Length: 113
Length: 112
Image 1 (spheres, chains in turn yellow, orange):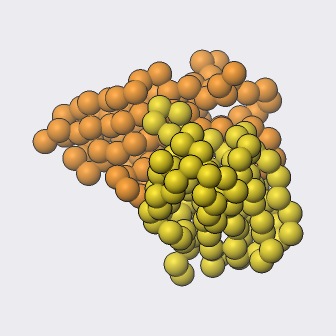
Image 2 (cartoon, rainbow over the protein chains, first blue to last red; image 1 turned 45 degrees about the vertical axis):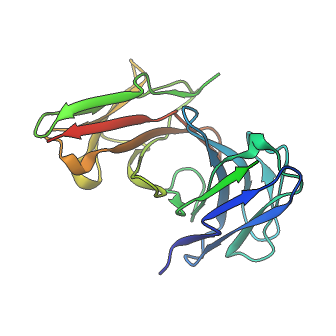
């Protein structure tokens, strides 16, 4: 099993550009999450999904959109990137809600100039 | 308000000495608590969790954590630290059915 994979690993954008981050998991997990990690702030939840075709807002959803068209994939979109979105983005998945372990991908380091 | 607090940004210990990373929480009801570790340029890895039962929870890599309800704490411990334990450690608490709240993280440095 590859577990949770994320593409790309690194990306540099200019302000106003758009991009999509892809998360894929091969563990048949129902629940998937997108977090951003900033120094001194821990991980903050952007959006999450409780199953194929469903998405919900997390703590910091503004400026991001998500889609879960297939159970194994969870896409995070930035429609018009801003410097404040410079961060490391992590995807995670879990078989059950928050009583269970979340499995994390390796992260995507995004810089917005 | 932050649901989980890690009061120390950094912890430095010598190899072979005990390691403690502190965490306090603030949630209503019975807490579900987790510890994760992040090595450089990697995603988070699960270490251990407390859901119910014994207050002392044993996890991966020789780590354990003690749940203390009266002090609302869930400190991570290791009796004898290794240089390879140097990493960023996150405490997390269940917010609701689907969400965890993470602390800001504590950087652990174990010197040889």
